[in-house]
Length: 239
Image (cartoon, rainbow, N blue to C red):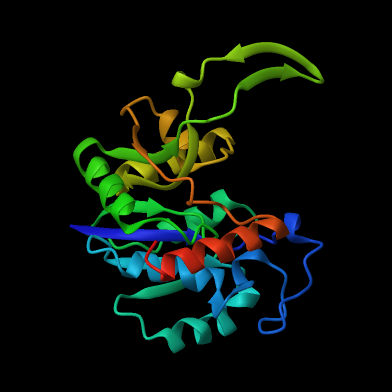
């Protein structure tokens, strides 16, 4: 079974705007900030290369990042193919561009935030297996805080946590299914905040949920880097 992983990494990282440019990469874009010895993107790629079920990784980047990102990837000598493609102005466009490059023998597509470097390979294998069986599966966790529905600054309702999921990635789908979902979204002018929202609109499959991890954080703010350093130290210590 061929499984392709798409890492959309063309974002500008506006929430990192106050972060000083990294001395090594010369950029403050979150996916290229250095976490200990390597850019965050490289840490994320390493995780998927280590997953037995993953066949290839496709990274969607801004066009002006392609050349020097290729040097970063080449230096790693990854044991699995890592391809770089031009992304778009939005996450949806970046994923769409990457989907267009996949070969027809691809069975499953996993889309993962490039700035979630602490995904556990066991979770990746679990969500891939679930999608292989049901066609669509995502990773998520149950919120620990009470969640309110609000309008402006007024509470409208308290939502029962047992029916809520905080969505993470990877999100995994059959190739034919996710291509159909992206095609319909383009036709309808629909823009979703994740790939699952596009697939849900088809109403042809139920998206399964695989429990994720509190460590599977998305590094989007400067303070997240400090937490990431702690997680990386713990990971390397085998904790």
